Length: 99
Image 1 (tube, rainbow, N blue to C red):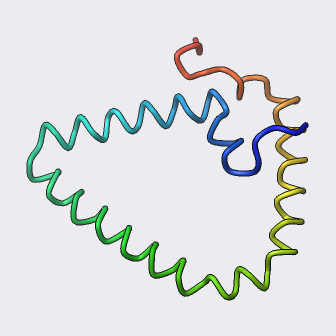
Image 2 (image 1 turned 30 degrees about the vertical axis):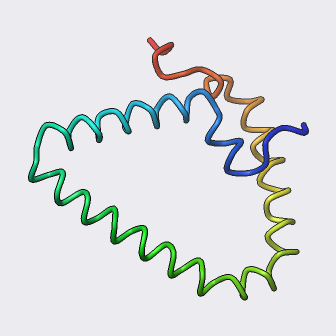
């Protein structure tokens, strides 16, 4: 359908983006309300960023070799998402439109 590729397309579905916004707001609010939780979350976030950076730098040569397979898998995933969007119109509704 010529829309956004892969994960960007999923993230921009109204249902997914509004659910993400809701969870993100609750997470931020909880961090601001409880200093101990904030310090634990900050340490966890820093650790995750460090691990992600290490994983990406280490995986880059492998990802380069797998690019054709990744591209094919992405194409199939986008086709599957097309069908899913057709069968589940609720994906186009933000969470606040439910009920």
